[in-house]
Amino acid sequence: MRRITLVAYAAGMSDLLPLFPLNTLLVPGLVLPLHVFEPRYRGLVRDLMELEDDDSREFGMIAVREGRSVEREGIDALYPVGVTTILRQVEEHADGRFDIVTTGARRFRLRSLDASEPLLRAEVDFLAEATDGGDEVIARRVTERFQDYRELLGGQVQASVGEDGIPTDPTVLSYLVTAAMVLPLDDRQSLLAAATTTARLRLADHLLVRELTLIGELSAMPAVDLPGVQPSVN
Image (cartoon, rainbow, N blue to C red; front, side, top):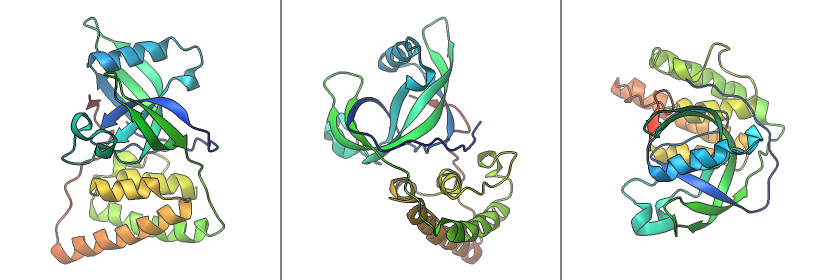
């Protein structure tokens, strides 16, 4: 249940944002279902549902570094760049749990973390989506290599592409590859945090070459773990 769309946002000033740490990574445009059962996140969903403007029902998704815990290490347990997500659909169960659907919106960089309450909140800076004239050239190369990558993995990355095929917009393409490639979290995070679309596409090109070479030389496929295809749990 995933699709890539482009939501344009300008860079913003600092703001206080409720956080939902995960052991995976969200990108702008990714549709992510979540199963919510912890009391602190149930309260967050209820608070968001009270907002009249659908686009204001926004909270932050951020990845936790492997082997680390926010309870022990605070902000150092989190990657510095995350993505806000907007609450789009809610199904409430009789016992108070929720099944929700969210859509990734805008990137942010952590400035400080407030862990004084069960629901984490952070001061963040929103990041602009910067592009330049070289995007289309590198985008064509990434598209070709990503097609080769998909073919080698068979249909295992089909869910991330959708019915319309690989997008032509360089920024959307850059986030699609970030979401769809089977990569260690550190690599995926580096793609997310890239300063510009071109920088993200160049890194994606390098990673595609690496993965295609490894698959060819080792005749081994990576273990596929596509974020967002199955509902995540908190």
